[in-house]
Each structure stands twice: as structure tokens, then as C-alpha cells.
Image 1 (cartoon, rainbow, N blue to C red):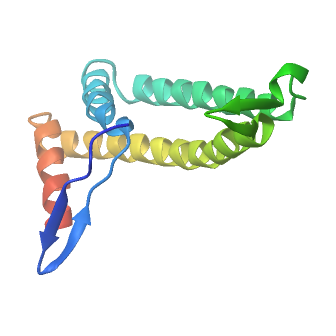
Image 2 (cartoon, rainbow, N blue to C red; image 1 turned 180 degrees about the vertical axis):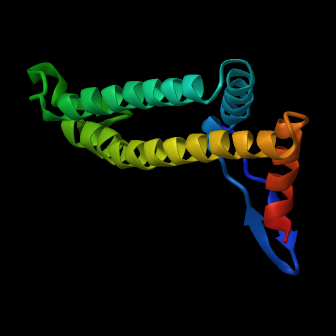
Length: 147
């Protein structure tokens, strides 16, 4: 499922591929929304919303962890899929068990990213006296990795 990765060649090296998750489609909207909230409601509202989002993610983590602790239903333990017998609890554990660590890493990155974004927005806002804080910050973020 999905799109075949495009092979890239960089400085004679390759083929290099760029594979991203569907989550990259969401993040531009998150930062735009954060900037709008920051502009109109301030630092306190963005922090509150960030903690609320983190709480929802932590709740989902807890529910998946609890689901992994439950004993499987008797009818579900062994299933035949494409002519092969599959032990479903092992598959469930393999898929959702590894996702828990991804959630922990994502949650940490989300909170750090949100708070750095908010603080830098307010710092640039004070520096530019309220003019073009978002644009200045975006140019700075684009400039930073290039140098």
C-alpha cells in the first residue's frame, strides 16, 4: 500500500529514498493553528492546548497498553489468513506493542516542538515589536539547517 519511494541521487550517492509517514500531512496544519492561537489568544492558550493534546495522546497510549494486557477472546486466538494459520495475539502484540514506543517518542517530540515553537514565536514577536513574528521565525527555521 502507498506510493513507491522516489530514488534520489545526491553527490554521486544513491539511490536514496525519502519515506515518510502520513503524519507529515498533519504537522503543517498543527503549526499554522498554533501560530493563529498564539497570535490571538497568547502563550497561555497554546500551552493549554498542547497539554490537552498530550493528555489525549497519553490516554490513547494507556488504552492500547491496557488492550495488550487483556486475554484474547477464544475464537480469535488462531485465524487462517491467506491459507496460513496465524496466532493473532502475537500479531496484535507485535503491531501495537511497538507502536507504544513510537507514541512515547512522538509525544516527547510534540511537546518539545510545541514549546520551542511558542517561545520562539514570542521572542521574535518582542524582537520585531509585533511585526512579522511568524514570517521571521519561519525564515529563521528555513535558514538554520542550510548553514
